[in-house]
Length: 342
Ligand code: NAD
Ligand code: WQD
Image (cartoon, rainbow, N blue to C red; front, side):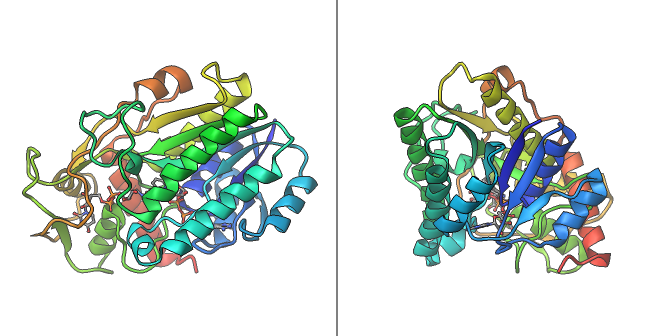
């Protein structure tokens, strides 16, 4: 079966996708500069699947290296482009760092494939919807002004991709708008590796539970939601990984919707922060210390996705629920305690 370039393939979502691609019979080839990941992930993937993925370490912002790589790998038929910076707060402090990395890497890849036929899957985000007017949010909902330079890189990247596909029929592109990816592989051999103090809820929960951090602060309990805390559509990273395999398959079959398409990738169900905390306690038996704090600047109140288009056209549906997300995240945190990936 086909060779698939996975940029950012040693990262959190990329590593899980490499495993699912191998399981589906594809040959993933990873390019990553390890700026936010660890080469030890290659050993971990090999432990899970028995196959060590081909790996190339370089910066995708270097156009010469990208062009040389593409010329040296003529059998690649698909690209899944995960590589990007993703820290919302840091992007507000250092916007140019985000615009530079997220745009140069994307444009270099697209340029390198000009003149060739390529299937291209892009990591977008539900952040493009901001606070939607109607829930669950569909792919037709208006894209709202981005709350951060990071969010803006996703919005503009989607425009770049739509315009590129419209101008050149060789590009077959799907943007996947992820909701909130959490959890880890059931083997606990791969998972999320947050740098420093986690900004996201679930890594903070597991680090707090294992004693690396103090109590969790629930950012706001005065939202217009049933328990007052904010609601998100949490999706298990393994389900998310499988959505990429489904997207590559749809592009290979020839997406009847055309050369550019967008899909929501979530469960279609929202959980509040307090529900997530309770689900963690119920599924792991570990009690959490938490306190209520003020709202976090830039947070939306509630968002969850309408996933009927993904179900219908991608033939994909999330299978794992919030308890499994929490159980796997906790198993991974416990594994890391004894096996730090440095
Ligand atoms: P991650 O940081 O774990 O993975 C990204 C990988 O890309 C890392 O391994 C990093 O070393 C690599 N990378 C970054 N810049 C590079 C460059 N210039 N050249 C080569 N490699 C480079 O992040 P993730 O959580 O796996 O996210 C993957 C993608 O999904 C990103 O585009 C992110 O914006 C998007 N996304 C993530 C979330 C989330 O909550 N994790 C939600 C929506 C969208
Ligand atoms: C979830 C909920 C917090 C930490 C971010 C990005 C988004 C996407 C996913 C990349 C919110 C609350 C959190 C804590 C809390 N990333 N929370 N205490 O903000 O939905 O999305 O990650 O594309 O672009 O913005 O995810 O995990 O940070 O927060 O109460 O210590 O948990 O306020 O309601 P978010 P999150």
